[in-house]
Image (cartoon, rainbow, N blue to C red; front, side, top):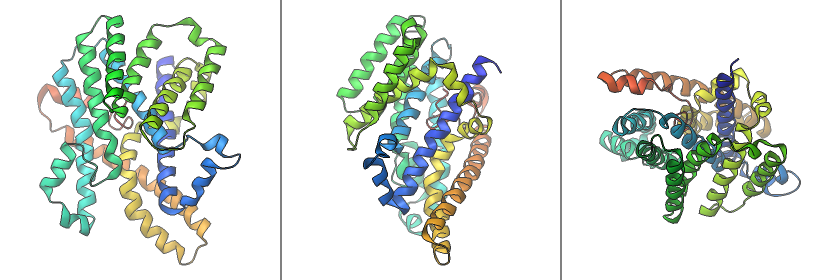
Length: 344
């Protein structure tokens, strides 16, 4: 297997592991919130503290920024075309999921008409599906990175400077999650500089330790999100610089699951609110609580995978109706490559 292919494989695996963090956090929050005590108390907190759904979203954001700038650094596509491509990659699956959620929920069907579903999807609202909160910041970050890459094409030093400046502006303006994505763009430029000392064992160890310390936060606030972003920046710098770690994640099935992780993220809460709730109620009548939750978790994950696969295929067919040259640009991106379509 080539180095390039192995690199993609381990990244996809990492994305699926990130999704599992999101899935686990939301499942526990809904059905057994007392289990979160293991994250913050006793010896298990040394392992679990920081491994939260928001940390996984930070991983997705940094990867989005990294691959957006990797794709655009030497690309010749017009900025407008790129923005349309990214917008449709976000909005089309969001609209499909929002519409299905409203149609499948009598209470929400009374609150939302088709027009409202359309508006909420097109403007990245999370009123229908709460986990869509990060779609807006991810799209804004994609557009910002695309703009900077277009303005500084061929001038890596200027590009890095603009990325750092935009990161500072985002943080000062309170747009932390946009800034987390821009951290990925900064990471790409730093790694492209091939700083030799960053690949040394002491440097990798130091970055891993710093990432571990930064990720250990309790309160959910903007500072926590910034620390998560910085931790992911360092953690991914370690992985990108350590082929042995990449090989550990080069697992075929994980790679495939990671390739649909964006759609997994979009469908997992609607599946939980419908399929899982019904399954838990049914099992609870005859099955002990622990077994009920274990069976429900496995069944829900399998249902998520099936729903995400079908969503990806549906989105692929929808995008085929986009006429002309823009369709080729959009379809050049494999559907569902990760939350935020992070491969660029």
